[in-house]
Image 1 (cartoon, rainbow, N blue to C red):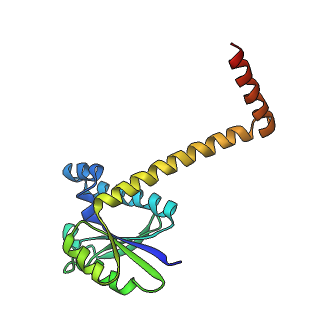
Image 2 (cartoon, rainbow, N blue to C red):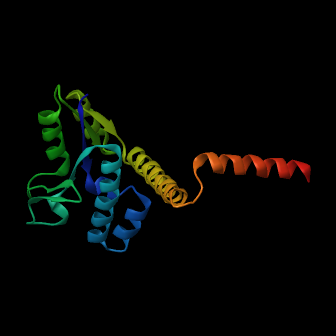
Image 3 (cartoon, rainbow, N blue to C red):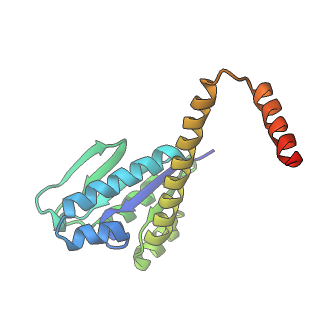
Length: 175
């Protein structure tokens, strides 16, 4: 099975996801970037993806850098390079027989370029919905684990619990 790699246009997501837009509008761009990375990290871990988040240097001049945070690769492009051009170049380089690259952007021109290189695309809205769905699944999974631990600490075994449930149903029918 191919390794799944998701290239994310960071500022494109910040401009499209409701909670990130409100942070951006409140001039809290650093908080918006941090929230995006946190959300994507949980998504990546749960879905088993590798994610590279790319930010334009135009919003943070002179910061060209690469680092790993929350097990995500974070890249601020060089001052003369846009996130779009970086993503288009890297998508072409990394998309091969062993790796399926998907690019998350709502920029139609960028989508066409990565499509022509064999990469897949997802819009900011589609990725947002996928992240929200995964967030809900994680929450449900946590609830299941909580109750599993609760049941595990119970003095009753599964067979006894089943017998008790059956008895409860019988008694409920008699009333």
